[in-house]
Amino acid sequence: MRNEAVAPHEAIRHARRAAGLSLREVARRLEVSPATLSAVETGKTGISIARLTRLSDVLGVPVAHLLGGTSPAARPSSVDSERDEQGDWREFAPLDVDPVLAAALASFVEIGYHGTTVRAIARRAGTSVPGLYHHYRDKHDLLVRILDLTMDELHWRVRAARAEGRDSIHRVRLIVEALALFHTHRRDLGFIGASEMRSLSPGERARIARSRRDIQALLDDAIAEAHAEGRIANSQVRAAGRAIATMCTAIPQWFRESGPATPEEVAAQYGDFALGVLGVDPVR
Image (cartoon, rainbow, N blue to C red; front, side, top):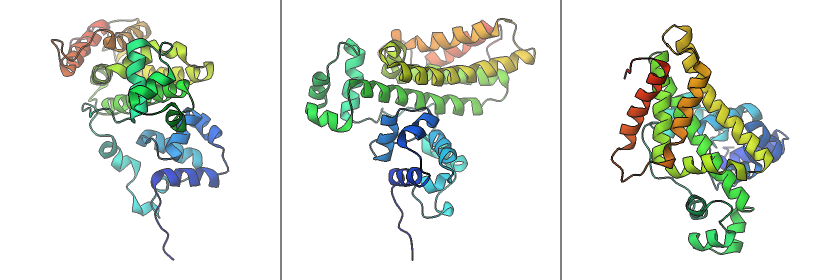
């Protein structure tokens, strides 16, 4: 008898239950909030290939199984499909989020997390307060989802950029360009990531902070590799790495789409700046 294929979110939920793991435990191992994993399992939000690969390890099943195929051969592997699924790290489509999350993001940017009410978000999204609570537990849940979205996208873009590097110096440059492109094209997400960490619960703040340190580590490792090769004049590599990352995360404070520079021009400039901080002649 032929098995019927199921939707990916259903396959993920079935695999988790078959593994005998609670939603909270799987979320802990993935370092996401239970609310985010619940949204994935109910089909309300998607999941990146990188996180799907981690989930397959946690649950002990092939990635193809989690994609809803009836057999491993029914779906391409994550290695073959990652670029197709995620796209080019330099290209940014409009942010694809539901109206409630879009309304929350806009409100948090305009007047801050604490200045925004659930009623104001619902009104902006064109829904009722009960309708909002049907999809999100509370205002904090919205902030967590925004920051999870931010970190997921940052991780895959930075890792994809690093993978294109010809050598250690080129990897540093591409990582910085990926950070700069994200913080221009996704200025609102970057702004919230920089300004509203303090509004998270202690547990969520610690989780997101770990994810941010992982991004910093990608840059630090590339810088350390170049330093070990004798290609960097600046001996303060750790401090330099923090300075470079901080200048990228500060971009949302000043960048405007109507300004004199495009995101791509800003990214190229920041690549030059980063190599200058490290004492390296700019290369592209």
